[in-house]
Image (cartoon, rainbow, N blue to C red):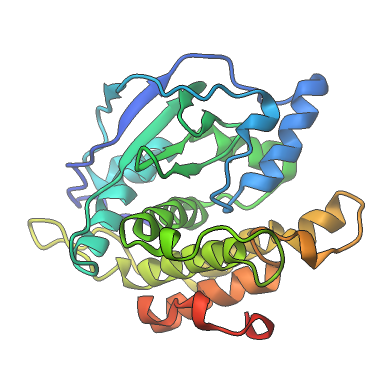
Length: 288
């Protein structure tokens, strides 16, 4: 999905924070990071504790410069994420009464949070106590280099929209209404993740209709190839696919985020039916 070059995408609350040493490949630590990458892409989960992450939040960070036009958003991953946050916030402000924007932190190497360490090794995640989304843009380069994985522009915005979906669940009380009840294909954890996928699909379907203060559309309508790119990426990190890739048997009782088919299906449900199609908690387990 591509921004219109002359769209005004300024106004994001995004900040840059970090300065530690992220695990980005090579050696034993790098192999561990690869496993964590597979678990984190599009999951919204935080597996930083596996890598020995700290539990203390860091400071506020610095303002991000030179990310105010669509052309700048198209030019690099960081600006694309910053710009997308503006459009996602606008969408939810018009869709959810009382919506408040989360803080977006663009991670530079690594930084501490109350939910664990944020880095390209832990991948993007939402930290509910802070109402903050953490994402390191080099995560996408790492995926391309080490996995040949899909990480195109729409896939990147899908990742971000998924995390913002968790923020919506937090402030709307969905997380408190449906607390974790263990693992499994019909668990609340899986339903929470699938709903975030559905919310992401709903935003992507509407994104080309959103306009800046001058009436210019932020984004061009996504091509079917771009949509397929995001769907393929989501499929690659379904719980069943990860289990197969790790050499184990598929065991749905241990699922925390949903199968490849489920993740694709709920993204498509949001894309085709909007946020009203995203009530994953009222669906019988066998129909998820």
